[in-house]
Amino acid sequence: MGENHNHEHNHEHNHGEEENIIWITNEEGVEEKYEILFDFDSDDFGKSYVLYFPAGASEDEEIEILASSYEQSENGKEGNLKPVETDEEWDMIEELLATFLADEDEE
Image 1 (tube, helix red, strand yellow):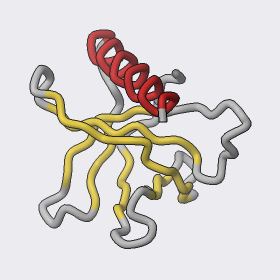
Image 2 (cartoon, rainbow, N blue to C red):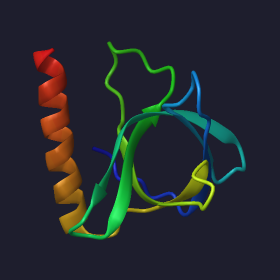
Image 3 (cartoon, rainbow, N blue to C red):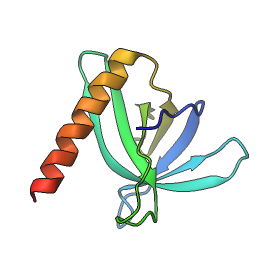
Image 4 (tube, rainbow, N blue to C red):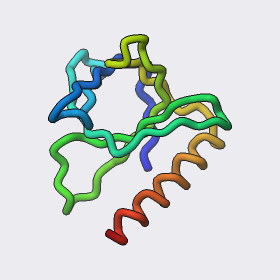
């Protein structure tokens, strides 16, 4: 899994048909579309996390899955992405991702 070294970015959740889409502004100020793989809360770290990948990637190609922690805004429609900071957090995320992907393969 590639580490996401992007700094804090704003992202918006569009509810409706694109509910699993977030838009992330990159360092050049360009909005990029990502699909949310899944998100979860961790009691151990007291944070929320989201795993996502570039929208439009075909299932045949290897996709880079990115992970960030995030803080939800008060209106619940957008939030601030923050980098995953510790090896312990990465270990937890990788373990959850492996479980998620194994479950997907069984379907």
